[in-house]
Length: 154
Image (cartoon, rainbow, N blue to C red; front, side, top):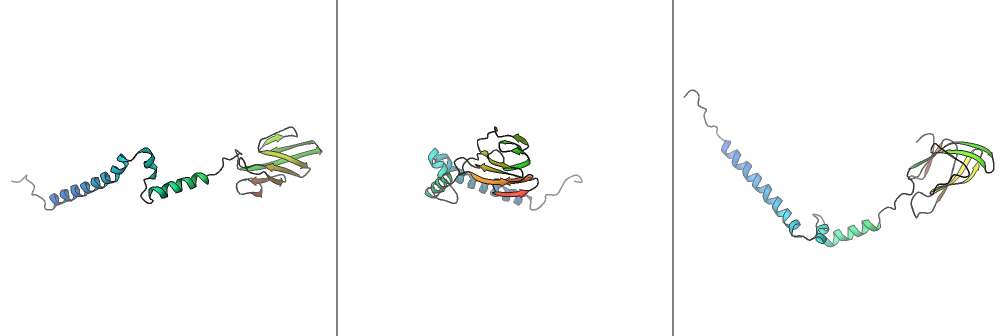
């Protein structure tokens, strides 16, 4: 009997405990998934652990009403790099690293006035929102979402 192992005490209890625990978890999962299988497509949105169906639908409607409008700008900072001013209607400015002249147009950013040391702009940050008028000096940035003008690079 030299090569035989002695049976260890406690191992069968661990197996029973594990199978009971696993069975309990499977039972809980089945109970939770049963309403999902029976619910129609319309009721599926209303299912919630924390809210009743009516409350969930009210919350969903409120979120839809309060959703943000799509941004009109594709950038969140407007940077004025430099101004070359030769006179009224004869100027070049660098916005966003691009050259703008009196003939340049953009659907959401308009240059209202240019002076030797500043540029007045009209910016429409969100579709349907009223335009904002700002004045930038060279090397200033307008942070659109924060409605803030800052010095230097963003």
